[in-house]
Length: 278
Image 1 (tube, rainbow, N blue to C red):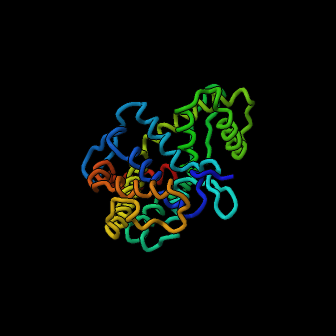
Image 2: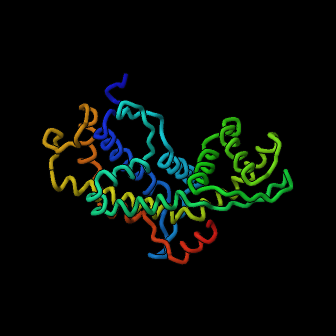
Image 3: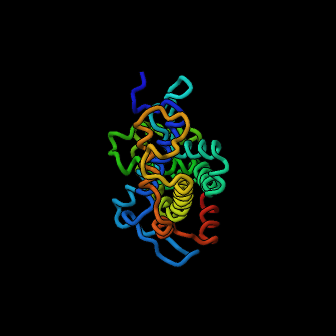
């Protein structure tokens, strides 16, 4: 039986999506993790510490990863990622999504996430040069999970690595996969460092567009009390009504808060990344 905090309608989903997406992007795009150097369009980011880079990867993978089946909509439980939710939002509110720039920003991010990349690395323990094909989303998953888990908790990740190796017709023993994973992650982190500036540009563009959309909604109904607000249709409880009020009151950032930490990368750098990872 769904409880009062379970997402039970598309209205509930909309509220949670707006709140959680804005919050996660505020954690990713900001001064706590990195600085931005250079002048547009030749900017790049420098992470403050190794731990800052690790946290960046963990936050980003949470943006892409599907959660547990916590949304009970249309008589069944469903799993959603924040990115999947943003696509649903753009399709549900096409005018708002287009006017704010959210549709284009989400499409650009989706294209990057789904892009196939070629990863090549040397593993001395098996005396082999390994070449694998995976998506950018998978690349971030490997980087993030190895940043937050030790070897004893990485059996699932090694299973995924085994499937990638089988796909490319490699044959290794189970005992060899820990060494393969260690060598792979060195190259994965290097790649992630390389294109982190461009990824933050994509995420920053989504953040700015979402923030613009929220400010536009508030301008149409400038109320600071939940009872005076126009709440999304289908919201099922006071929990979600109050959460929507929190979005309208507290998640309207000044554009400079986002723009200052959204790097603008050069066309040359973007093309070089596409060539390297295409």
